[in-house]
Length: 358
Image 1: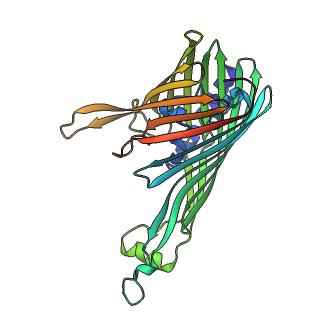
Image 2: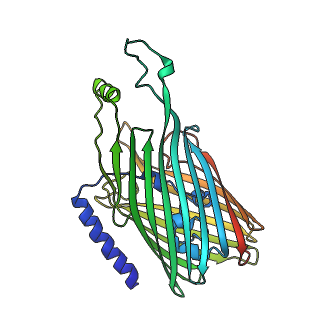
Image 3: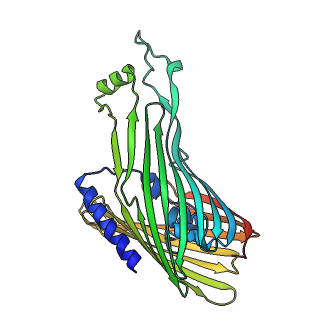
Protein backbone atom coordinates (compact mmCIF):
# COMPACT_ATOMS: atom_id res chain seq x y z
CA UNK A 1 0.00 0.00 0.00
CA UNK A 2 2.86 2.39 0.78
CA UNK A 3 4.36 1.71 -2.65
CA UNK A 4 1.05 2.52 -4.36
CA UNK A 5 0.64 5.75 -2.38
CA UNK A 6 4.19 6.80 -3.26
CA UNK A 7 3.57 6.19 -6.98
CA UNK A 8 0.32 8.18 -6.86
CA UNK A 9 2.04 11.09 -5.11
CA UNK A 10 4.88 11.24 -7.63
CA UNK A 11 2.40 10.85 -10.48
CA UNK A 12 0.23 13.78 -9.36
CA UNK A 13 3.29 15.98 -8.86
CA UNK A 14 4.57 15.25 -12.37
CA UNK A 15 1.13 15.85 -13.89
CA UNK A 16 0.86 19.23 -12.19
CA UNK A 17 4.32 20.18 -13.40
CA UNK A 18 3.62 18.99 -16.96
CA UNK A 19 0.39 20.98 -17.13
CA UNK A 20 2.38 24.14 -16.62
CA UNK A 21 4.51 23.29 -19.67
CA UNK A 22 1.38 22.93 -21.87
CA UNK A 23 2.57 19.70 -23.59
CA UNK A 24 0.97 18.31 -26.73
CA UNK A 25 -1.23 15.29 -27.30
CA UNK A 26 0.77 12.52 -29.00
CA UNK A 27 1.77 8.86 -29.38
CA UNK A 28 -1.79 7.55 -29.56
CA UNK A 29 -0.60 4.51 -31.50
CA UNK A 30 0.68 3.18 -28.17
CA UNK A 31 -2.89 3.11 -26.81
CA UNK A 32 -4.42 0.78 -29.42
CA UNK A 33 -3.51 -2.37 -27.50
CA UNK A 34 -1.72 -5.63 -28.30
CA UNK A 35 -2.79 -9.27 -28.28
CA UNK A 36 -6.13 -10.60 -29.50
CA UNK A 37 -6.98 -11.77 -25.97
CA UNK A 38 -6.87 -8.20 -24.69
CA UNK A 39 -8.68 -6.75 -27.70
CA UNK A 40 -11.46 -9.33 -27.37
CA UNK A 41 -11.92 -8.31 -23.72
CA UNK A 42 -12.16 -4.60 -24.50
CA UNK A 43 -8.54 -4.01 -23.41
CA UNK A 44 -9.53 -5.02 -19.87
CA UNK A 45 -6.49 -7.13 -18.98
CA UNK A 46 -4.39 -4.80 -16.85
CA UNK A 47 -4.64 -6.94 -13.71
CA UNK A 48 -4.94 -10.37 -15.35
CA UNK A 49 -2.12 -10.21 -17.93
CA UNK A 50 0.01 -13.30 -17.47
CA UNK A 51 1.81 -13.78 -20.78
CA UNK A 52 4.29 -12.05 -23.07
CA UNK A 53 1.84 -9.21 -23.83
CA UNK A 54 2.18 -8.09 -20.21
CA UNK A 55 5.29 -6.21 -21.29
CA UNK A 56 2.87 -3.78 -22.92
CA UNK A 57 -0.10 -3.91 -20.52
CA UNK A 58 1.46 -4.42 -17.12
CA UNK A 59 5.11 -5.54 -16.80
CA UNK A 60 4.47 -7.34 -13.50
CA UNK A 61 2.43 -9.92 -15.43
CA UNK A 62 5.68 -11.24 -16.94
CA UNK A 63 6.21 -13.04 -13.63
CA UNK A 64 3.20 -15.30 -14.36
CA UNK A 65 4.05 -16.61 -17.83
CA UNK A 66 4.71 -20.13 -16.43
CA UNK A 67 7.40 -20.67 -19.05
CA UNK A 68 11.08 -20.01 -19.38
CA UNK A 69 10.72 -18.22 -22.71
CA UNK A 70 7.64 -16.97 -24.56
CA UNK A 71 7.22 -15.29 -27.94
CA UNK A 72 4.19 -13.26 -29.08
CA UNK A 73 3.20 -12.01 -32.55
CA UNK A 74 0.26 -10.03 -33.94
CA UNK A 75 -0.71 -8.38 -37.23
CA UNK A 76 -3.86 -6.38 -37.90
CA UNK A 77 -5.09 -3.93 -40.51
CA UNK A 78 -7.44 -0.98 -40.21
CA UNK A 79 -9.27 1.42 -42.51
CA UNK A 80 -9.77 -1.15 -45.31
CA UNK A 81 -6.17 -2.32 -45.05
CA UNK A 82 -4.62 1.12 -45.48
CA UNK A 83 -3.06 1.17 -42.01
CA UNK A 84 -1.10 -1.83 -40.73
CA UNK A 85 -0.38 -2.60 -37.10
CA UNK A 86 2.36 -5.08 -36.17
CA UNK A 87 3.55 -6.35 -32.82
CA UNK A 88 6.24 -8.77 -31.71
CA UNK A 89 7.58 -9.55 -28.24
CA UNK A 90 9.68 -11.94 -26.23
CA UNK A 91 9.56 -12.63 -22.48
CA UNK A 92 12.22 -14.43 -20.42
CA UNK A 93 12.19 -15.63 -16.83
CA UNK A 94 15.34 -14.62 -14.94
CA UNK A 95 14.65 -16.52 -11.72
CA UNK A 96 11.70 -17.33 -9.44
CA UNK A 97 11.17 -13.66 -8.55
CA UNK A 98 12.09 -11.69 -11.69
CA UNK A 99 11.54 -11.55 -15.45
CA UNK A 100 12.13 -9.26 -18.38
CA UNK A 101 10.67 -8.68 -21.82
CA UNK A 102 11.26 -6.88 -25.11
CA UNK A 103 8.40 -5.62 -27.29
CA UNK A 104 8.22 -3.95 -30.69
CA UNK A 105 5.21 -2.07 -32.10
CA UNK A 106 4.76 -0.52 -35.54
CA UNK A 107 1.71 1.35 -36.83
CA UNK A 108 2.15 2.64 -40.35
CA UNK A 109 0.72 3.59 -43.71
CA UNK A 110 2.90 2.58 -46.66
CA UNK A 111 3.05 3.54 -50.35
CA UNK A 112 1.79 7.10 -49.87
CA UNK A 113 2.20 9.05 -53.16
CA UNK A 114 4.36 12.17 -52.97
CA UNK A 115 3.05 14.57 -55.63
CA UNK A 116 5.09 17.65 -54.69
CA UNK A 117 7.29 17.06 -57.76
CA UNK A 118 4.39 16.22 -60.07
CA UNK A 119 4.74 19.44 -62.07
CA UNK A 120 8.10 19.96 -63.75
CA UNK A 121 9.94 23.27 -64.30
CA UNK A 122 7.99 23.90 -67.53
CA UNK A 123 4.64 23.50 -65.82
CA UNK A 124 3.87 20.10 -67.30
CA UNK A 125 2.34 17.17 -65.46
CA UNK A 126 4.79 14.30 -65.30
CA UNK A 127 3.47 11.28 -63.44
CA UNK A 128 6.89 9.65 -63.56
CA UNK A 129 7.95 12.22 -60.98
CA UNK A 130 5.61 10.73 -58.36
CA UNK A 131 7.47 8.92 -55.57
CA UNK A 132 6.16 6.95 -52.63
CA UNK A 133 6.91 7.01 -48.91
CA UNK A 134 5.77 5.54 -45.61
CA UNK A 135 4.48 7.20 -42.46
CA UNK A 136 5.20 4.95 -39.50
CA UNK A 137 5.22 5.09 -35.71
CA UNK A 138 7.46 2.57 -33.95
CA UNK A 139 8.23 1.79 -30.33
CA UNK A 140 10.64 -0.49 -28.48
CA UNK A 141 9.67 -1.46 -24.92
CA UNK A 142 12.21 -2.90 -22.48
CA UNK A 143 10.36 -4.42 -19.53
CA UNK A 144 11.40 -5.71 -16.11
CA UNK A 145 9.40 -7.14 -13.21
CA UNK A 146 10.31 -8.15 -9.68
CA UNK A 147 8.33 -9.88 -6.93
CA UNK A 148 9.14 -7.96 -3.74
CA UNK A 149 6.71 -9.85 -1.47
CA UNK A 150 4.67 -13.04 -1.94
CA UNK A 151 1.60 -11.02 -2.96
CA UNK A 152 3.24 -7.84 -4.27
CA UNK A 153 5.11 -7.25 -7.53
CA UNK A 154 6.60 -4.15 -9.15
CA UNK A 155 7.80 -3.51 -12.68
CA UNK A 156 8.37 -0.95 -15.36
CA UNK A 157 9.13 -0.16 -18.98
CA UNK A 158 11.73 1.93 -20.71
CA UNK A 159 10.35 3.08 -24.08
CA UNK A 160 12.24 4.24 -27.14
CA UNK A 161 9.98 5.74 -29.79
CA UNK A 162 10.81 6.45 -33.42
CA UNK A 163 8.33 8.18 -35.72
CA UNK A 164 9.04 8.83 -39.38
CA UNK A 165 7.29 10.41 -42.36
CA UNK A 166 9.32 9.48 -45.44
CA UNK A 167 12.52 11.49 -45.66
CA UNK A 168 10.70 14.68 -44.64
CA UNK A 169 10.28 14.27 -40.90
CA UNK A 170 11.45 12.03 -38.10
CA UNK A 171 11.56 12.00 -34.34
CA UNK A 172 13.14 10.07 -31.50
CA UNK A 173 11.54 9.85 -28.10
CA UNK A 174 11.97 8.35 -24.65
CA UNK A 175 9.57 7.43 -21.86
CA UNK A 176 9.13 5.41 -18.68
CA UNK A 177 6.22 3.36 -17.28
CA UNK A 178 5.78 2.03 -13.74
CA UNK A 179 3.54 -0.74 -12.41
CA UNK A 180 2.46 -2.36 -9.14
CA UNK A 181 0.28 -5.47 -8.74
CA UNK A 182 -1.20 -7.03 -5.61
CA UNK A 183 -2.81 -10.48 -5.72
CA UNK A 184 -4.54 -12.67 -3.18
CA UNK A 185 -7.10 -15.47 -3.47
CA UNK A 186 -7.46 -15.05 -7.26
CA UNK A 187 -8.10 -11.32 -6.82
CA UNK A 188 -5.65 -9.02 -8.59
CA UNK A 189 -5.31 -5.26 -8.12
CA UNK A 190 -3.04 -3.33 -10.47
CA UNK A 191 -1.94 0.22 -11.04
CA UNK A 192 0.14 1.25 -14.05
CA UNK A 193 1.51 4.75 -14.55
CA UNK A 194 2.29 5.27 -18.24
CA UNK A 195 4.58 8.04 -19.46
CA UNK A 196 5.11 8.82 -15.81
CA UNK A 197 7.76 11.47 -16.50
CA UNK A 198 6.00 12.74 -19.65
CA UNK A 199 7.26 11.01 -22.78
CA UNK A 200 8.91 13.30 -25.32
CA UNK A 201 9.42 13.17 -29.09
CA UNK A 202 12.08 15.45 -30.59
CA UNK A 203 11.03 16.22 -34.19
CA UNK A 204 13.37 17.14 -37.03
CA UNK A 205 12.09 18.23 -40.46
CA UNK A 206 13.96 18.14 -43.79
CA UNK A 207 12.09 20.06 -46.49
CA UNK A 208 13.52 21.09 -49.84
CA UNK A 209 12.72 24.38 -51.56
CA UNK A 210 10.07 22.79 -53.77
CA UNK A 211 8.19 21.36 -50.81
CA UNK A 212 8.33 24.68 -48.95
CA UNK A 213 6.92 26.36 -52.06
CA UNK A 214 4.07 23.85 -52.22
CA UNK A 215 3.31 24.33 -48.52
CA UNK A 216 3.20 28.10 -49.01
CA UNK A 217 1.02 28.01 -52.14
CA UNK A 218 -1.49 25.66 -50.53
CA UNK A 219 -1.72 27.71 -47.33
CA UNK A 220 -0.23 25.00 -45.09
CA UNK A 221 1.93 25.83 -42.13
CA UNK A 222 5.60 25.00 -42.62
CA UNK A 223 6.60 22.63 -39.79
CA UNK A 224 9.49 23.53 -37.54
CA UNK A 225 11.76 21.40 -35.39
CA UNK A 226 10.37 21.04 -31.91
CA UNK A 227 9.53 18.88 -28.92
CA UNK A 228 6.26 16.96 -28.59
CA UNK A 229 5.23 15.66 -25.17
CA UNK A 230 2.85 12.94 -24.06
CA UNK A 231 1.28 13.58 -20.68
CA UNK A 232 1.13 10.83 -18.05
CA UNK A 233 -1.87 8.60 -17.60
CA UNK A 234 -2.72 6.27 -14.75
CA UNK A 235 -4.44 2.94 -15.37
CA UNK A 236 -6.30 1.00 -12.68
CA UNK A 237 -7.30 -2.64 -12.93
CA UNK A 238 -9.15 -5.18 -10.79
CA UNK A 239 -9.72 -8.80 -11.82
CA UNK A 240 -11.24 -11.83 -10.13
CA UNK A 241 -11.05 -15.46 -11.23
CA UNK A 242 -13.50 -18.18 -10.17
CA UNK A 243 -12.96 -21.92 -10.53
CA UNK A 244 -16.51 -23.02 -11.34
CA UNK A 245 -15.61 -26.71 -11.36
CA UNK A 246 -12.77 -28.93 -12.56
CA UNK A 247 -13.48 -27.98 -16.18
CA UNK A 248 -14.65 -24.37 -16.22
CA UNK A 249 -13.17 -21.09 -15.01
CA UNK A 250 -14.58 -17.59 -15.22
CA UNK A 251 -12.61 -14.33 -15.06
CA UNK A 252 -13.91 -10.78 -15.01
CA UNK A 253 -11.96 -7.54 -15.01
CA UNK A 254 -12.83 -3.88 -14.62
CA UNK A 255 -10.25 -1.30 -15.70
CA UNK A 256 -10.19 2.48 -15.81
CA UNK A 257 -7.84 4.75 -17.78
CA UNK A 258 -7.28 8.14 -16.17
CA UNK A 259 -5.85 10.62 -18.69
CA UNK A 260 -4.37 13.98 -17.77
CA UNK A 261 -4.39 15.96 -21.02
CA UNK A 262 -7.75 17.67 -20.57
CA UNK A 263 -11.28 16.83 -21.61
CA UNK A 264 -11.83 13.70 -23.69
CA UNK A 265 -15.01 12.21 -25.06
CA UNK A 266 -15.21 9.41 -22.48
CA UNK A 267 -17.72 8.37 -19.83
CA UNK A 268 -16.34 10.64 -17.08
CA UNK A 269 -15.11 13.97 -18.44
CA UNK A 270 -12.99 16.42 -16.47
CA UNK A 271 -10.16 18.89 -16.79
CA UNK A 272 -7.39 17.85 -16.63
CA UNK A 273 -8.53 14.34 -15.61
CA UNK A 274 -10.89 12.20 -17.69
CA UNK A 275 -11.78 8.58 -16.88
CA UNK A 276 -12.51 5.85 -19.42
CA UNK A 277 -13.77 2.59 -17.79
CA UNK A 278 -13.94 -0.72 -19.64
CA UNK A 279 -15.04 -4.24 -18.71
CA UNK A 280 -14.00 -7.69 -19.94
CA UNK A 281 -14.92 -11.30 -19.17
CA UNK A 282 -13.38 -14.66 -20.06
CA UNK A 283 -14.86 -18.17 -19.80
CA UNK A 284 -12.32 -21.01 -19.92
CA UNK A 285 -12.79 -24.72 -20.56
CA UNK A 286 -10.07 -27.13 -19.36
CA UNK A 287 -7.45 -24.43 -19.92
CA UNK A 288 -7.73 -25.15 -23.64
CA UNK A 289 -10.66 -23.13 -25.02
CA UNK A 290 -11.54 -19.57 -23.99
CA UNK A 291 -14.51 -17.40 -24.93
CA UNK A 292 -14.18 -13.66 -24.32
CA UNK A 293 -16.18 -10.45 -24.50
CA UNK A 294 -15.68 -6.85 -23.50
CA UNK A 295 -17.09 -3.35 -23.75
CA UNK A 296 -15.37 0.01 -23.61
CA UNK A 297 -14.78 3.31 -25.36
CA UNK A 298 -17.97 4.87 -24.00
CA UNK A 299 -18.65 8.15 -25.82
CA UNK A 300 -21.27 10.87 -25.62
CA UNK A 301 -23.02 11.68 -28.90
CA UNK A 302 -25.07 14.85 -29.47
CA UNK A 303 -27.38 14.77 -32.51
CA UNK A 304 -28.76 17.69 -34.54
CA UNK A 305 -31.61 18.08 -32.06
CA UNK A 306 -29.14 18.37 -29.16
CA UNK A 307 -30.27 15.00 -27.86
CA UNK A 308 -27.49 13.26 -25.94
CA UNK A 309 -26.95 9.52 -26.23
CA UNK A 310 -24.08 7.24 -25.30
CA UNK A 311 -22.32 4.66 -27.46
CA UNK A 312 -20.11 1.77 -26.41
CA UNK A 313 -17.76 -0.45 -28.36
CA UNK A 314 -18.45 -4.19 -27.99
CA UNK A 315 -15.73 -6.78 -28.60
CA UNK A 316 -15.67 -10.57 -28.72
CA UNK A 317 -12.88 -13.12 -28.92
CA UNK A 318 -11.80 -16.75 -28.79
CA UNK A 319 -8.65 -18.48 -27.58
CA UNK A 320 -7.19 -21.94 -28.20
CA UNK A 321 -4.20 -23.31 -26.24
CA UNK A 322 -2.53 -26.55 -27.26
CA UNK A 323 0.93 -27.95 -26.52
CA UNK A 324 2.58 -24.61 -25.78
CA UNK A 325 0.95 -22.74 -28.68
CA UNK A 326 -1.81 -20.17 -28.15
CA UNK A 327 -3.97 -18.83 -30.99
CA UNK A 328 -6.18 -15.90 -30.04
CA UNK A 329 -8.83 -14.18 -32.15
CA UNK A 330 -10.74 -10.94 -31.63
CA UNK A 331 -13.43 -9.07 -33.52
CA UNK A 332 -12.77 -5.45 -32.62
CA UNK A 333 -12.28 -1.91 -33.92
CA UNK A 334 -9.57 0.73 -33.61
CA UNK A 335 -11.23 2.63 -30.79
CA UNK A 336 -14.40 3.08 -32.88
CA UNK A 337 -12.59 6.01 -34.49
CA UNK A 338 -14.11 5.50 -37.92
CA UNK A 339 -17.17 4.09 -39.69
CA UNK A 340 -15.03 1.23 -41.00
CA UNK A 341 -16.18 -2.31 -40.33
CA UNK A 342 -14.73 -4.19 -37.39
CA UNK A 343 -11.40 -5.89 -37.90
CA UNK A 344 -10.52 -9.55 -37.46
CA UNK A 345 -7.39 -9.74 -35.33
CA UNK A 346 -5.28 -12.85 -34.73
CA UNK A 347 -2.28 -13.23 -32.45
CA UNK A 348 0.05 -16.10 -31.61
CA UNK A 349 2.06 -17.09 -28.56
CA UNK A 350 4.70 -19.77 -28.31
CA UNK A 351 5.89 -21.27 -25.03
CA UNK A 352 9.43 -22.62 -24.92
CA UNK A 353 10.39 -24.84 -21.97
CA UNK A 354 7.04 -24.45 -20.17
CA UNK A 355 7.13 -24.84 -16.41
CA UNK A 356 3.64 -26.31 -16.36
CA UNK A 357 0.48 -26.45 -18.41
CA UNK A 358 -1.27 -23.07 -18.24
